[in-house]
Picture 1: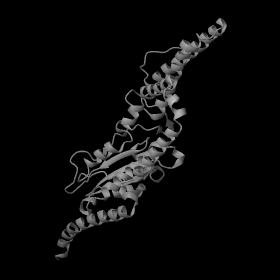
Picture 2 (picture 1 turned 90 degrees about the horizontal axis):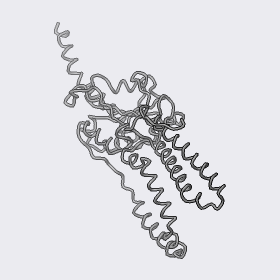
Picture 3 (picture 1 turned 120 degrees about the vertical axis):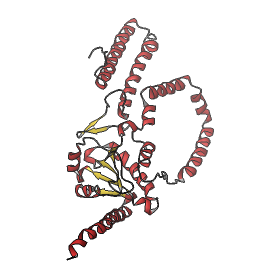
Picture 4 (picture 1 turned 45 degrees about the horizontal axis):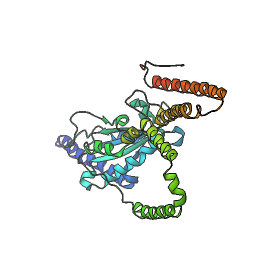
Length: 322
């Protein structure tokens, strides 16, 4: 008669053991995986994010296979593994409270459809649902990759603030720079000294310094430094298509900067030709043809630049030919 009364008590005692077994299972899989990153499919994704989990999970959803042409995914993947490897160095009792995982598009298309994702990579942090590390507010926190860019420092800061314990970013020691750079410096110095009769005139050339200055100006005015600071991706993939231009004035892509720099360089070259080379022509006919030709190219390229600004922001008010 007492057996039915003991069944609920037994179930309550077995629940913590089941939760501990689940955490131990994922801990064992993470220990065997590369960099401590769990490779998921649709089924294991749902299993890992069970509603009764006592651990938190950081998941990156990617599209790594070559057919998807997701360059940001390729660039982001080693950063994710480096951060996961840094967390893997935590003490076991801390490490088992949080897991890093990865779901690739071919392995989890139903999950992508359920979440309504059209871009990759996407980073999501899922807090623990029960236990001492239970999140008090959001069920999931999404990392703003467009704002932070493909840069490991803000990603590490984002995750370190959310994990059960903050952790340092481990950077593997690479001895090659300390060996190769001194050798290359000595070799370069020896080469310059041996060829000083040729090198010195080049270093004193106004043309060389002018070209170098123009190249530096075009590089920085095209947005190169913004890309370096923000870690902007070279291109993005949206709805299976590669996009080389980011909409709005707050975002920018690497290829977009190269296109703008090329346009600026063409405009600068047109002005140089009109001010230096065309007036140097001895024939009035050649001067006239040169003015029409290069001035026409200047107007066409300016029109392309205005059109590009219009494509980036539909509210841009200016335009020339098209």
